[in-house]
Image 1 (cartoon, protein in one colour):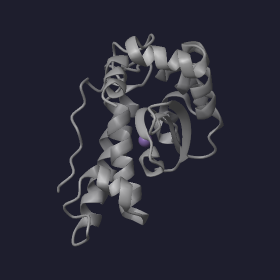
Image 2 (cartoon, helix red, strand yellow; image 1 turned 45 degrees about the horizontal axis):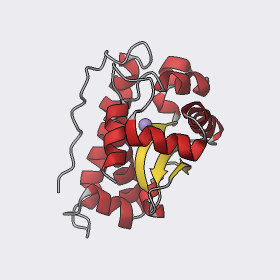
Image 3 (cartoon, helix red, strand yellow; image 1 turned 180 degrees about the vertical axis):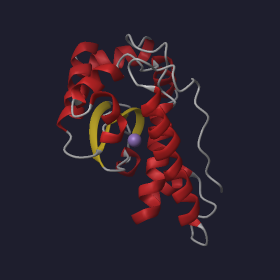
Image 4 (tube, rainbow, N blue to C red; image 1 turned 120 degrees about the vertical axis):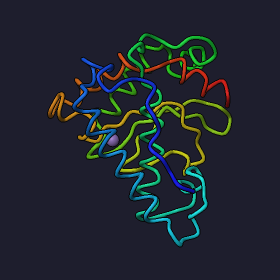
Length: 194
Ligand code: MN
């Protein structure tokens, strides 16, 4: 199948001041687009030519995995941001977070700390295991928790290209801004559909 850059549910300037239009022009318009283009070129004539994105993430390796997982990861990340985001989750997800981490504040601190301490490029994930129990995972480079048998619920990109134009070396400042944008309605729906 031909993979496509998803349309975002917000304009490129609407996440300001937490994430600038300039960052989205590069991060979504250039980086995310490049992963899509590379993936479409790489799968031609291979066993993955007709595969869906999740199958590619699950079974491929090398360049096809790197680009396919980056398409998946970026779409998962961008689709869960909103100019009206922030605050705290409600419902079943809120209860599960409180049960697993003690409180939303404790979860937020642990997730933020995972992002701040991830060495190099990668992604922080809130995932559910096969018993629907929540946990936080750090994955390097294009890593995706599907390959560990986990179901992704929330992700945060901590590659430098996600924040360098806005906060330069200050990754913790980007992480602080990220929480202003998390669209908990999308995240709650992912959890409810487990
Ligand atoms: Mn990125």
